[in-house]
Amino acid sequence: MAGYWKSNRRAIAGWAIYDWANSAFATTVMAGFYPVFFNQYWSVGVETTTTTARLGLINSIAGLAVAVMAPFIGAIADRSSSRKRFLIFFAYMGAALTSSLYLVNSGRWVAASIIYMLASIGFSGGMIFYDSMLKDVSHGKNADMISSLGYSLGYLGGGVLFAINVWMTVSPATFGLSDASEAVKFSFLTVGLWWAVFTVPLILFVREKKSGEGRCDLEAVRSSISEILATFREIRMFRPILLFLLAYWFYIDGVDTIVRMAVDYGLSIGLERNDLILALLITQFVGFPSALGFGIIGGKVGAEKAIFVALAVYLLVTAWASMMTSRNEFYALAATIGLVQGGIQALSRSYFSRMIPEGKSAEYFGFYNMTGKFAAVLGPILMGGVGLAARRAGLAVGIATRVSILSLSLLFITGGILFFISCRSADA
Image (cartoon, rainbow, N blue to C red; front, side, top):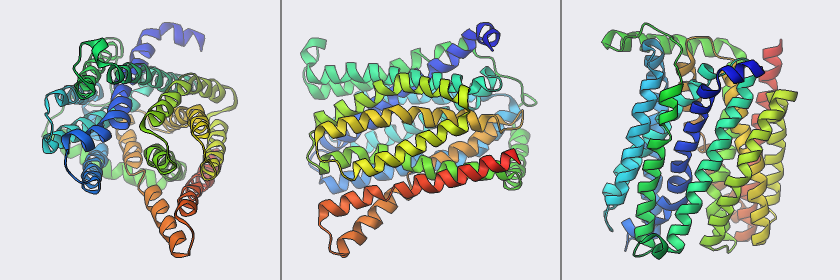
């Protein structure tokens, strides 16, 4: 094991650093500044309900586009041995478009929407091939630690740049900027440059294992479509993979819903914007060592047991969130989520990588990422439905909101049961 790390350290580092590169988009743009800036700058003068609907539509279109195309481009990349080329294309597409948000002026919500949507496709499209290249830099059980290293660096890199970007908005004059709005726009430029620069180590040091004929023509596309159908039939027949993907859909839906709804819930209990930014930073910096810790735990006790531990913590989180009342509790909750969020993501990726047949990693990870992109669908619907039902039953607004958050525990329980069955099926 130690010999493998020593002989492949440049490839492993190059692969893991890409998470450092693209997590800046996830943290500064997706979770941090874009939603607020879209509302207050690009949609200035528009009602909040309208801007919320627009933003939801943008995210839905981008997510659906990636979910639909993921298996197809994965199959094409496998057949043509071009996973690395696809990753480079999507990465620099996302980086260039993110940087171009700097040029979009106030009130130009249509331009901001289109650019953000395409940048999101670049981010998610690149992740398909980044995930699939885990098999190019790992061997056997060390996939857990290598996958965790990637997520760990992602939390650190995303957190470092986000902290700098927050500093820029709080004290724009320090950076030679006129005001907070210019600082936010400049932050988008820094994210694009950060993403582009730190993609270079992967380009230089990671070698893609040959998985197909090396051609990417019309015939390869036709053959890839046939292979997708065959792979779908394989997945249906191979019970452990099918059950794992179903389990992953449920529990990662819960994880993503908590990420997406945390800000809204924080606002509903009276927290300020700065409180929410601090909570996000706490999650990032706690997530850095915790993701590495989960990689070590996964290597010692097995990824399966570590995933179950993370699911148990998420059950605790949903119960705790339904009862919390103070800002300090929200910070503690953010730290607790940071302990397990990167771990469950990293070990799910490495666990799935060991189930994949040789030469079909991008195609199978296409289905994996398709499942991930359809996540955060059940959760919001479940929360909304339970909240409405609670209100109609006569509960107060505050209590109904807390009951709706508690309902997310059903996703973790269902995902845990399916994952347990999948593990038993794989052992049989």
